[in-house]
Length: 210
Image 1: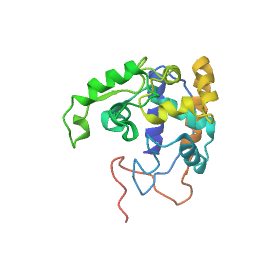
Image 2: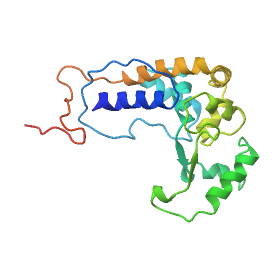
Image 3: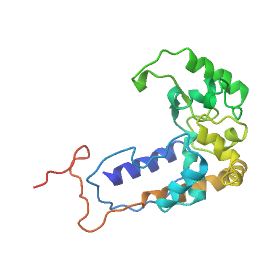
Image 4: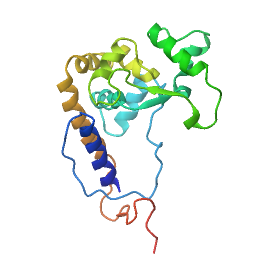
C-alpha cells in the first residue's frame, strides 16, 4: 500500500504541473495506521517545526520545500480564523497578514455558523494565486503577507527560513528540483525491512495474523 500511495502522490504532483521524479519501490506496510502522528501543528513556530523535521532525518531546506506543498490544497476556517478575528487575544487580526486578505477571510469565516463537522466549516485555498498548480507561487504569496496558516507566513519572516523562501520565490526551477529531492527523502523515512511490517494483500485492512 505504501508504494501505491507514494506513486500516486508522485503522479498527482506531475499532473498538477510539478516535477517528475523517480522513487524506489518495495516498501513493506506498517502495522499501525495513524495519519496525524507525524504532522506538526499549523501554528507552531519555525524553530519547533525544524526541530521535528530534524528528528526524522530531514533538514531546513527539506522543511521549507515540503511546506511548499501548500501550493495546492485548502485550509478550513478553524485552522486560521484566530489570525483574522482575534489574534492572540488582542481582538484584532494578525498584523503580519495582508489587510485585503484579512477582509476576505473575515467575510468567509465570521459569517459561518459553528459546526462540529469539518466538512461544514468554510475553507479557502492555501495558495490564492495558482490553486491547482504545483509551482513556486506559494512562496511569492507569503512574501506578500498572504499566507493563510500562521506557519506559512512565519516561513517568510523567520531568519531560519526566509532566505530559502526568497530563493524559491525567485527561481521556480530551484523549487522544483528541491521538491523532487525532498519528496524522495521523505519517502525513505522509517522504511521497514526484513520481517518488519507486512506486504498488505488488501490496501484497506491489515492482513490476518494467522
